[in-house]
Image (cartoon, rainbow, N blue to C red; front, side, top):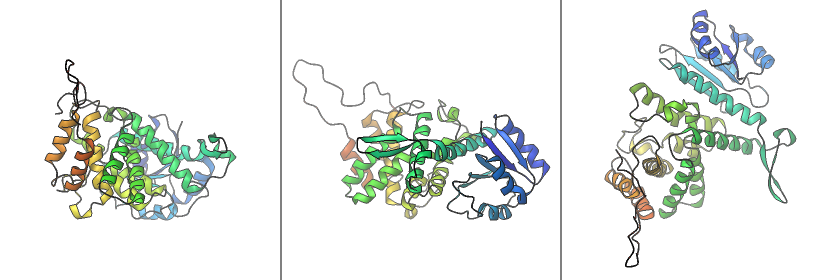
Length: 351
């Protein structure tokens, strides 16, 4: 069971949010005063702190009073008219959810944040021994904070990948393809390594989304699409809080952006980083060819669709590098035998 500390100075906000969390089998601890936040956090050791106050500025001052260890992440739940949550400290994860939102979105966000904290505090960590890689409880060693948080991000990303509507291994396939394209383009080795890490973590923000949404067959409704489009920024925010490099987090945040501004957040062409341009193409290609909830493309058809959007949605040089790496190769077939298909067997035209 997840322990949630719910801080709301107004009774109305307690009544709005409390039932949503209680209905999800959370252990709910309610507090009405910002001054008692630290006391309750220390006493109850919550997995997540949910803050529902009209003005978040005062609450942020309490967030900056860093607790020892890895303090629970903070989720601000806001009405449309509330002021925006300002800059948060880099060493404590702070997220925000503004109305209108679905009850399941709140529950999913809280569950994902709790999973991050529990992974940091309780899960085993890899340790090098003379006989190879073994596992040891985090209680029995002192790993570096950077290594620990990187492992947490990877574990959460694997969990998110398993809940998605793609064939298993989507993140690893995207990582391999992105690396191939980056090498074809002559990226420096450090950037290739950074891109591989970004590709493996690119969908980590989906950990907070309902599995039913990710696996829904057929078109998504307007509200469902709004929710789905939050995952790149949410994932980047999580990675920044876990100490990820700026370029890596930027690539994750921009992997659904487009050169023509038609992406999830409408970022302009000049704002998109080189890692994100490669990641966007690699992700789109694997999504077309490995979806379990949308009509799946054959390799050749997926390439045609991506080539058709070169210079508009996708970076032309990246698309050309993908085409050189991923296009189906002609095969020599001995006479008297049926020719083998050069594309993915049984793949239906994508719609």
